[in-house]
Length: 296
Image (cartoon, rainbow, N blue to C red; front, side, top):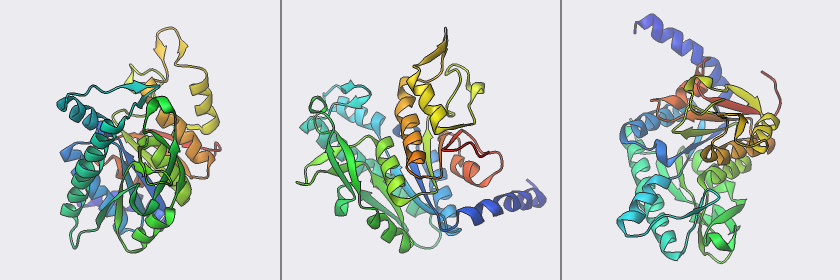
């Protein structure tokens, strides 16, 4: 790439940098998109955005990693309606993987990429009452819905120039830990912070008209249009699957986020290096964008 090409890219990014400086952006990293090289690219993205004033909060899941650890420990994962059945033993495994392994690895990766001093700090939803939960359903065990986000915890970390990395374990008012769906946790955090954007980094290109056709990407739609797609079921025509079961929680979280005041929600392919920068700082962007009103 020539110096002129580099200059054109920087000029293209400038209005976006001005627009998002000082604003909060919540980024949810799905377990299926966690990979050593991609995590390094994401770390660079987070650090660059931080350096131009964007207040990034990284929220991570870890479903595949939890599944793998459970099987290594002789326990078969169980799901109901897409949610992990979490008994006391499973809860300990989830905490160990999310808080003790994935969170620490992401923090270490970001800090290794920092040029001056370490800035990433790991935070569990249990810490300082960040995520208060209520039990979701008895049949699911220790699975909770977020009832309150103590956003002040994250705002203070950001004001200190730090980059919070949040693992999605919360606690009820008695201190009992609960597993939280990471898509929902990220949505709750974004809404409580009044975030400009929430970005879901997934192992898919975005919302597709046909899940078997990567070229059928839906680039943008409103929350109402998104809810209609979910409500009308998984198929719009014989042989054409428009909404896969695994995508529904993310789509619903996107609609809920923008209806709660988050500026825009995005589902993008976290397997693409520097996908976050491409989405936030270029004219083209990637993936699917959701807004409350059709103002594009």
